[in-house]
Length: 238
Image (cartoon, rainbow, N blue to C red):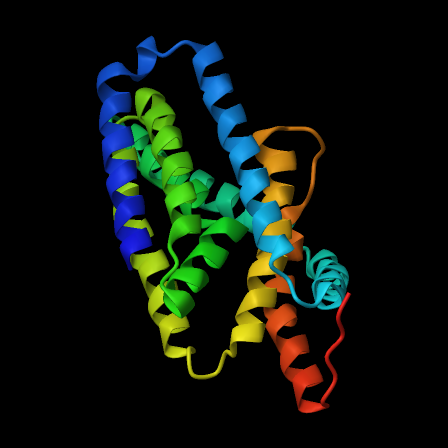
C-alpha cells in the first residue's frame, strides 16, 4: 500500500500547488517535464521487459491479448464510460458545484483508468515493489497541478478514489501471492513493461497513437501461459 499512499500524497501536493501557482507555470515547462517523464517511463518499461526469461510468452500474451482487447474494444469502452460519467454528473450539477464535480470526476478517471494503475497496484501487492506506482505518482502529481489550476479544488478529492481503487487492487493482489510463482510475476512485469513503452510512445511523447488499453488482457495471459507451460513441463526460452 506504500505506492498508493505515495500516489495520494503527490496528488494532494500537486493539486494544492496547482490551486496556488498553476496559472503561472509556462506551457513550455509543462511540455518539457512531460517529455522527461515520457523518456523515463520508456526506459523503465524497457528495463522490465529485459528481465523476461521467456520472451515468447510475452510476445504471445501481447498478440493474443491485443486481439482480445480489440474484439472487446476495451479502450473505446473506457473512453465511453468516462465521457458518459462526465456528461451525467456535469449536467446534474448547477452553479459553483459544476466545476467541483467536473474537476473531481476528470481527475479520478485520468488517475485510475489505465494500464499503469493496474500493473503498478498488482506489482505492489504481489512483490511489495512500488517503483511503478512511484512513477505514476510523479505523473499524477504533475497532472493534478495542471487540472487544479483550471478545474479547481475538486481535483484534490480524487485522492479518495485513488486510495480506494488502487488500495483494493493492491490488497487483492497480495492475497494472490500463494498462487503466483516467481516466473509468472517476471513475465507479468515484462508484459507490463511493453505496455509502459506504449504509454510513453503514445500518451507522453506523442510519437504514435497506440491503443494501450486494448493490450490489458496481456497482463492476465502472461502468467496464465507460464502456468500452463509449467504444468506441461515446457519452458520456452528466447
